[in-house]
Length: 117
Length: 109
Image 1 (cartoon, chains in turn green, blue):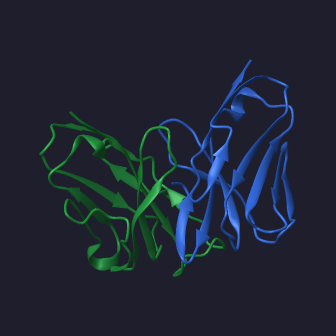
Image 2 (cartoon, rainbow over the protein chains, first blue to last red; image 1 turned 135 degrees about the vertical axis):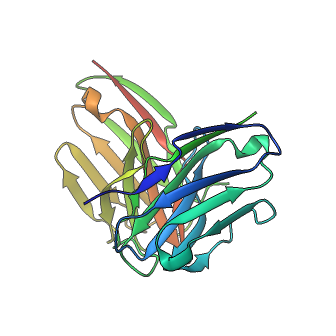
């Protein structure tokens, strides 16, 4: 079974530029998560999708971040415009369950490392 | 402020030593998970503990969930270089998922 795929693996941009990340979850997984992991910290949940609907985006900085999951499969996360403090690893995860419970395992992709100069 | 605080933040030990990592919160969690993350990879689930006072063992790793379900610990016996990585606890509180601050472990051969 293929794991969660993410691209690109690395991205370097100037501040105020735009950037987009792509995630393809494990086939059949209903729930998709985007996390931001700043160096030296644990991941922070940005947004959670259940199929193509948003379940939780309370920690997503909506003035500059947006995400979509058209057709309930793959997803894109966009930052526009980027700031220096957006430098982090952006992790995508998926799970087969429909609710946020710890009986359902999240499978993580390798992440995209973003550097904003 | 992190909902889940981990200690220590960094740990560097020699192969063969024992160690304990702690995950603490002022909030009650219905269950907690432990993950290990290696450089350039996403976190990988190690264990889920669901009952207060529960102890789970995974080879040389022992996980304990506090009686009050506010804290957890991870004990590694006879650490090996392959145990090197970032250890993260995680839990659901009011239907939101939170990771701890992480403990970076380095086991020297």
